[in-house]
Image (cartoon, rainbow, N blue to C red; front, top):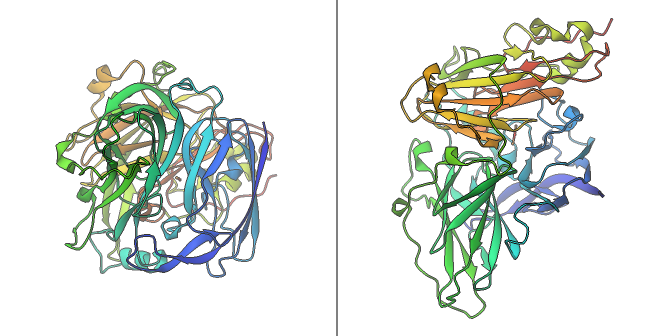
Length: 502
Ligand code: C2O
């Protein structure tokens, strides 16, 4: 295994990716779009980050990495670390021992939609599908705004926006452009690596005239599953094989189409689609793209892991989270888990866990309103999430893959335990699952990764103060008292100030 070192100056630059508005964006070493990171499984990654923004703090999260033994390298501000102030540096140092398609992004509040997000691919010398494709095609989808996030957030969390309507993106991007062309050869098979690095919009994705064969989701290999259309939420990833037709008389469109169900209003001027082109080198014409409603999106709950891993045994602990959205006294809209909305703790939860010694198993350490859950190492945990909101919410668990064992349809209401009979024998493991409007889901995981871990909706508008976003802590190895601390720390008003070790 190698050590891969990145020296990053994080600073403002300018870009106009949709051709509609040039704007300030957060770049790395003066460049934007951000670099695609190619890593090989087993590599150590070192990032020397210098915050050259001048006016904003920052942080960096490698989405989907387990950070086993390196919870302090995970990045979410208030959970595992403080913001890195302007003029300061931060060194990330961790190993990547999982293959697949990922991304990296700022985990400071509301920052990544201003540009600080890019794709990460972890190559796997033992990929079970090696030999079944000729080359790889990395692809990102995202939504895009023209205004900077601090101003948009101020308008969003305001008594003037009592319904919590999220700002609607101005456009959609594919590999940070609207003019993507990818050269391909007839008859060849490509491993597409698709990451939704957007802030808000899930996207429908299809390739005209071609079937996709899904082999990986969120870094976990799947049994091959064929489809004409994928629905990919913010922060999810799909890996799929596509064999190009041997007829090269036309070039084919790849289309990303933002899910307008998420938008309170769809402005007449909004182009909800982004189209890229797979092109042959003979100058063939472009084949017209089919329309969104000619397809049925793939049901991701039918995916099965390629390794055949079965459902974990019954849960030792069930955490039930009722998600609702409502106004507080300031007239602004907030989201709640079990009637508690999150306020970022003054002291990052990991520091609290590490400095409270023998008391660290005590939920009270994390504050009366933290919704912290203290787990025993290796216990099996179910999170039952009941969505009392009419929106779709893609939930992400840091530090783990979970088994997606149940998802109810729209309007089914709270999870009913009789549905246990429907749990699949070999549920798909992944790190982001969407709960449907007024529906529920159940995810199951083993608390086998010591640390403090966040559990939150990945719609960036909902992160931090707004969505029921929660920190999850599982065993912290080697804390001040030398004991193993097991904490599932769901986010809430964390007013705890860490006591010093005795
Ligand atoms: Cu993509 Cu909390 O992470």
